Structure formats: C-alpha cells, structure tokens
Amino acid sequence: MRVRILRPAFEDLAAGRRFYDRRAQGIGGYFFDSLFTEIDSLSLFAGIHSVRFGYHRLLAKRFPFAVYYKVVDEEAVVFRVLDCRRDPNWIKNALDQKD
Image (cartoon, rainbow, N blue to C red; front, top):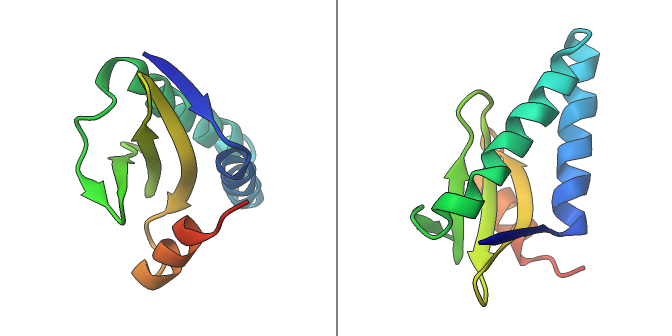
C-alpha cells in the first residue's frame, strides 16, 4: 500500500523536531526518524489501528505522538501527527481544520 503524507502532517513533524531539538542536540533528528519509521509501517499495517475522531490512530512507540490517517483507494493518507499530551478537544479541532 502506498503512503501519502499531507502538508499539515509534515508541518507537525517539523514542529515536533524543533521542540525536541530545543531539549537536547540530536533528539529532534531521532524524533523525526522514529516517526517516519512509524509512518512507513503503514505500507504494511494501514487500517488495523483503532479509529478516533474519524481517523485511524497509530500511536508512536518512542514518543507521545499519534499519526492520524485514513485509508483511501488502497492508499494510507496521513493527515496529522499530533502530540498525545494535548487536550483531546484541541486534537479534535486540529483534525477538523481543513487546509
């Protein structure tokens, strides 16, 4: 299955990377690589994750982030990559925003 990442998801990844880079050198790159590995796994496992707010939600293993995606025509489309520590209402609003 193909995986397509939309611009808001890339922006989420970049913001997460900046956040972790401010904590310690090299952590931002590790965050970015870890989340991309999780996203790449969707080529094999898309559609098996629980549904939250109308999206499948893949929970990252090493960071408190979730990948929100939908399966559309044999393609996993990643809409957002959001911090799970945020208020659930904020997450729902972020997912409802249309770019």
